[in-house]
Length: 341
Image (cartoon, rainbow, N blue to C red; front, side, top):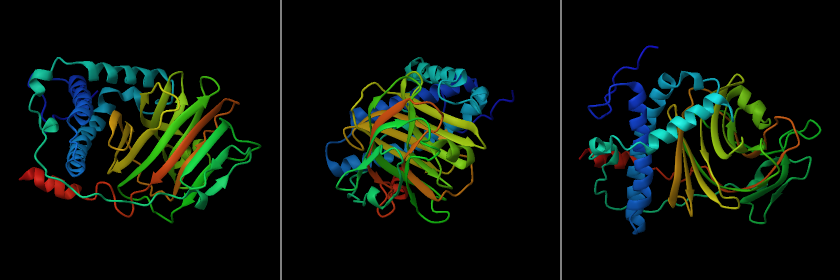
């Protein structure tokens, strides 16, 4: 295997291999999660400034992780389906790296962990998606939209299509709508599932209106809830029927709303998972590469997985915000400039 070129990113002097560099990056990822939860200012304006500077540092870290991941774990690429041996080995290596504190003394003062004085920033309200305006296919009567239009409750959704018909909520945003960078926010609650191997898609952008499996086989990036055999929130990028990259988080609590931020920045995808609120307690941060240059047209609030079988999921998707009026990170350029001073 040809080693990756020595990056400009700052590593401890004692770290000499790509495998150990990746372990350092995962440790920094864990330290950033802890920093987010421990150092968040109580003042709302200062909290917004902190969160956006923190997010800029996280994106730089994710770029480095995604650069090294295929070098250190080449077997993962193309074999990252739920429950695969390669995905399990990668997940275990990531969690081991996050807990590895051997380099902590050398990481003291690392730029990724540096918090400058950024002052405060104003709020940026943004409208939410009205699911009642979405195209609904629901042959089994599994989807209910509440009176506000912002909450979709899914009950007893099977893995498979129903009589050959998909189950989904989708919106046509127009040709090439999701062509650049974006940040989408929503809330996800897993209420119940019938047995291990159940799966459903809670969110996706795609080029056509199909179930999750068909969309992923063409040019899809998606967020799934699955049980393989652990309860997981799972992001995956598929091309031509092959899982090219993925990342996932094991979560324990049913009936707990998780606040999801799903972002694409260049080829890098970042998924932030909070409890309490967006910007509340950060439970995990996921990342993967989305190297497909396809500009996607449709956004989905939910879809059936279509992997066969009768296993079922109950879950809720709420308050989907595509951040297209006042993006949450609209002032990132200002944050970057202030960090340079």
